[in-house]
Length: 256
Ligand code: NI
Image (tube, rainbow, N blue to C red):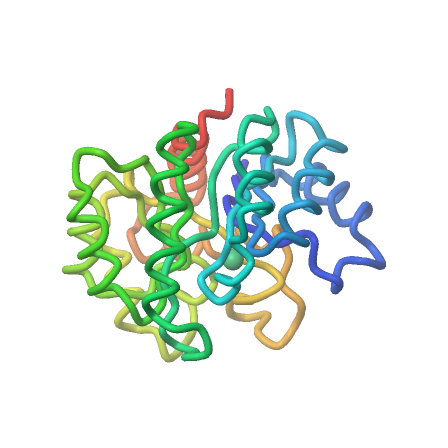
């Protein structure tokens, strides 16, 4: 069985077949699955959808750096209240994204720090989205060493050296289909060096469709391709890799 630790099942690309897709996931060994919010619309959707599939779908709620302006007082109160819902297992995705420069970096940092502190207060692990901002993200995290929530760096794209720093701070490292891309040889080599007990796998669907399905809509079933890719590189069986990474995710998100 595989745990897709990061999917966006709210996406409109699933509007026509969401229920059938979830039924296929259940039939074909993707269990459980975390649907992740990034803005308030997605957060509400994630919580509602998870409630329809108790014990199978779980939700993460938070404000993505590109949507930083959504962290109003009213929305912050909603997040704090819903953080206590039993289907909500993580605060995320939160972080820094300097790829698009439409949200000022200082604002992203403020919103990131506020949510890190909130997650610790409500005792939820965090799902970090860090893109082209590992230096600043690590500065923020290092400054809070000892008072950080647990968490995972999702869709990892950084160097091995940065990964070691995140792991030293207690974070897991999660890989999507991006690790399978032909132009990602360096990232694949980074993945080889991360200890198996610190790795999670995910699809980040509908984005990041793994090889050989690139160009098609991604969905949580493709977490198997990510797992197979990492297992092949390491010379371990896909059964072992999926079991260990699934256990890592269940433990981090405290899913029984
Ligand atoms: Ni995502």
